[in-house]
Image (cartoon, rainbow, N blue to C red; front, side):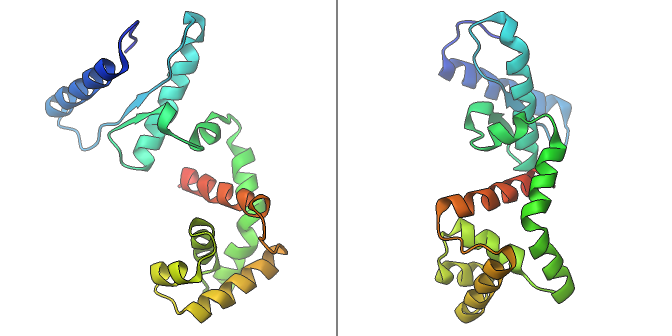
Length: 172
């Protein structure tokens, strides 16, 4: 659907109304709607369409009925990369050592590392969410730092790894 000169709240009400009608008529298990971005020039309409497709993909990923491209956060950038192999290569380059260690030792370093990044290194929060003793969490964090050869002291040290986890979610 393409609209011109429509207030955003009116537009969103229209989209939600159309969604409810379509869902009621189609009797499908899942229906997802992606909303692109506003464009000032009709020659950029294809960009809004591509962004709407990205929003649909993310809506499916997170099981949300309606997703706006403008609300996608970092996924805006990740979904805009045409060469998905770049993303896959980045993920594997950064996390394969943990994945391989987990496979070989039946460990949970990758999962622990994700929560380490998510909870800004708090052993208490990581222990709670993983149902693991705090000493075990500390041991795993030390092991992760050694395997990655990175002390994870700064935001710049951690950011690429968080991106890798976002990529992993995309690749599911």
